[in-house]
Image (cartoon, rainbow, N blue to C red; front, side, top):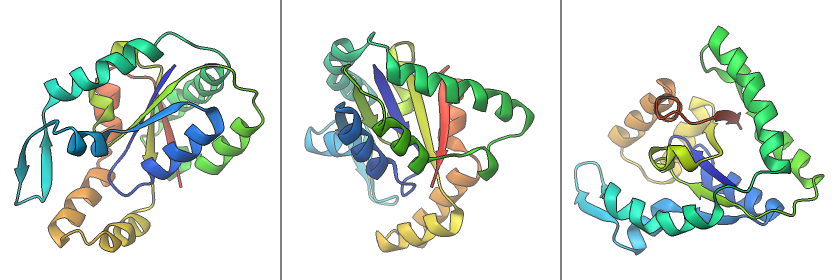
Length: 191
């Protein structure tokens, strides 16, 4: 089973991914860290203070993991499928907003009660939803309140321009919209 965790930088993707990995025993890949450590980027953008990912190199890096972990679907798949189906109905009636967020803490508490004996992979990055849509079981989009996001990004010493860009991304649901456009089964969680 393969789960992507995506969302605007600062929403809590990596924290959630680490906890989910602990509970499930699934392998966790912090994609942004791997891009940096394995030089899976084209260049460094000084103006935006970010690495520009090389999509081809990154896909090649992820390919062996995707082959190894795709296809296994059991208890966790059923759990997320039920949430995804409920949210899909709500999202058609009412676009992404805080009322539609499924609480992260509830997910983590529920999963602790499930005896998990399956292998899986968690790929965490604001870019993860751009890869292998046909092999992915679920894409979890992490959302957070804008004031909290701004506070987290300031703590990371992001420039005002970079903070504004990321808040705009959160407001306009960029990661959610791209995941849906890529044909992924999306679950929206909030903290």
